[in-house]
Image (cartoon, rainbow, N blue to C red):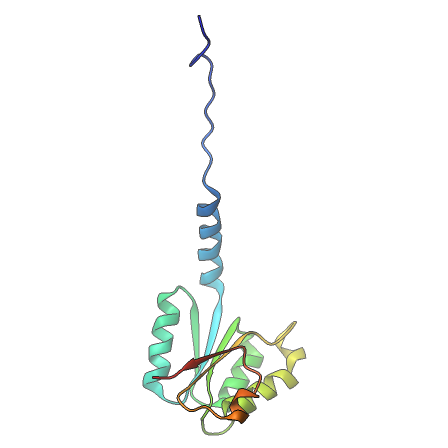
Length: 133
């Protein structure tokens, strides 16, 4: 008589993908995104997208306030408009890079969001660019 089915042990293992997804969800809840945008309706729209993705959003309505919040809150990601009163997006990025020691290990990734493009803006040192509708 064969031993098939006798004394067999079955172990239940969670798939690795579920574990990774759980870890990703946990880190998403802790991640902070700083949104620097002078147009409040656009800032609110970006905030909704960020929060719907499970991240925490922090808003600044000009570059000077964005710099202040970036240095104090240490965000994981920054989105910034280019054309703003006070510091523009390029000046904000330059100030962040100059203050990198206060940001922790390094400046977080920066996404420039703008309807206007210029050679000067493209030299400002952002990590990614999105066209503003």
